[in-house]
Image (tube, rainbow, N blue to C red; front, side):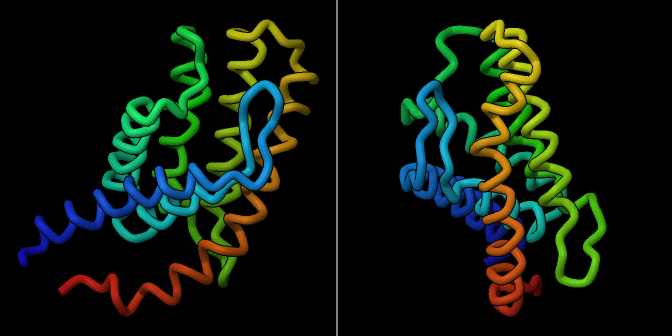
Length: 166
């Protein structure tokens, strides 16, 4: 199998893994948002392929979220872009930020970008005051970030021998 085909297969695998992990909800917020492991797949894709293909995987994953009916944007274009497209695609850029030892700074930065996007959406699309939107979104995005900071480095290090490019 050539590298291009292998990359496409891995990219499809990461997008499918994102959808599968999105279905396993640890905690669901009453007005949308949840604690799950789906972002792990997008972060692994970014660290595996780099930011360009990582962002592409995230965009495809957004399309799959729409197809599976997992998006909760109620027709608001602002919500669609800031709660989903911009927020999840940010994870694809994680590999742009340098790792410090085994601490992947890209996870923290992209999680904060997701928090900013969702907070903005809450303020504009849902007409929620800034601090209320920030507090609400932080309740589920920060725990997801903490889970990602723990799991992604462990999983990625274990997968490195399998993911090497020939």
